[in-house]
Length: 471
Image 1: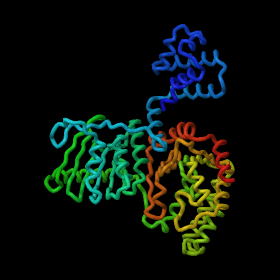
Image 2: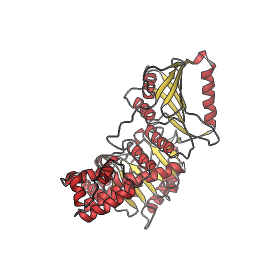
Image 3: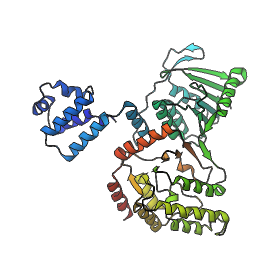
Image 4: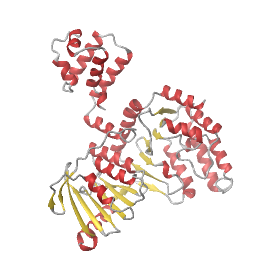
């Protein structure tokens, strides 16, 4: 996000106008060009930058784009460092070319011996979990969510190999902004893995920063303690040879009993479908911010959904089945609420390729799998209907960003639902639900001030692009 700093704007301005620092100072009647150099080197105060910007507007005939760029750069300069950091980190979840995450955690003590070579946590995690694809692992993580560690886990889980890994991650309930940013990033990043189980630790617990990796196939345990932002210790042991490993596992069992699980799910989706629809109907009263790869199945026009269910013989149950009638009642009331004049605002951010794919193949990312695909006419009708909805603000991510499998919906002041649509609704559907108010505020700021303002086309441009797809 450094390209949004005033220094970057000024550097480009000087280059575009074929100026030098000296000639710029002369035109603006600035006697000391050091003031300009300080701005270019990010060493000027915000008041100095504001004063300089006012003179720039006064002495140059600026275009509307120039004025908009100045305004945006001044806005960025006044943001707290924590906000800039939050937006930069979370943007990496949706960027097509995210910034590389540096290795910062270095091992200082390994199996009771001081490390003489540079070994980083990223490398240790890879070495342990790459021992054998056939091995069964269980990982217990307590208050460890550095970006490098999260990315190490993500890369292992998505390297194309079949793995048997179960992850239990415990997050602290904290007021620390940076910690909450990292926790949000980690939850969203790892939510795609079906055997990932996050928890929030009770505030009454004094927690530490450690992780315990169990290789059940080889009866090995690896205990890693992180004692500051730069260093960790590493201990490898045989599970059967010491009480220490059993003691550590018992400690994590105690921790689990004092923590709240964040992953919700169900094993029988057909029986749970009415309950899920009714829960969504209750949440329809919240202002929402939805980041979706395609239009949501639940937002399809009721008449289209009815035809899909009809063609499936109502999930094989028949129209008069009590479950089907209960679903129809909820679906119809949801559509009325969605299109109600001056209704609740739905801010919806779509992936451009996802919308195009939906129009072409007629399947939403959360499509009920036993239902047929929409016809081309039904898909076009559904998208047009959504575009015409005055309560829905539709944005398209620009070409530098995409949803990937990180779909999420923020229900303002209530919860953040995170899920991977590629796992499907029918097969062990689950989602992670974050209710920490501090995290919700961070996410709302990120979507409003970063995603919508800087990563999306405008409302008008988004609508034009979608309408072009519909032709």
